[in-house]
Length: 396
Image (cartoon, one colour):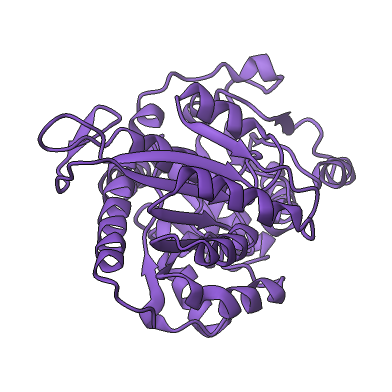
């Protein structure tokens, strides 16, 4: 059984726990580290159908130094090793990972993000790890060298996992990866935590109670196109009492705060930084917005949908895998502030329709993107790959 979030999923039975090493580039706050944390905790909770023992023994390693998610993993009882790489070209991390693998002797190595994928494949293959798989978390178009490295090293692993169909298509077209090597295994969230959360008091953040509230959550990075959102808000603010709550931090914050001043939106926008009460903040908002250039599988949008919010987002990779246009939200052209504002206005003007969109989104997350579904997908993947390893099948 999979015991995760109070639910159970039937899995096949093994006598001995299988050692799995999850390797990630870093454990800073972000989508991939959070996905690794969810996967590690979920796998650690999987129980055999007979005997009551764990199906997997899970350990997490980060190429970089300590990050906030490392402490969260340890608090959940997961052993974490931070290998202390000081940059992309710190080759000492290969030796450190080799020592960890030699000591832990994992039967399966699952890496996440390009630096961990390349390092894990090279070191894991050299040391004879039975099964190796790497996950691609985004359909990023800016860094072509990421794609070249994935292409050059993918055959050192049994498979490459893509977190969405959009990412799979991206890796075929842009990176030239063979379709036969690719698997889609979506991440998931604890949907019940967002569905059942209390509502935050927005007045404590300096926002005006009674105004319609648009919320954005994530890392303030150029690819997220929060500047487009601010320009869309400028048009909305002339027509209705609406305000924007920005949850998160990042390198774009200073520039965006300057843009808020230029657009005379200081009274309508709140930058509240990193928060631990995101579920409650989502529960107090009216609509979630995500105007990114691209995503992989946007956990922030899934969390908003679980909280019952309609989602207005870009029609782009990752978001089209999550948001069903006219069913759970609205999709608009990338970078089009006018279209984004119009879509937000349509949702804000029809409370009944917005509620139906939110309800449909919550059900979609419960059925397709729960933690239980995520863990079950990965259990199936791991068992298939380790079975091939036991039979000694060669990689294509």
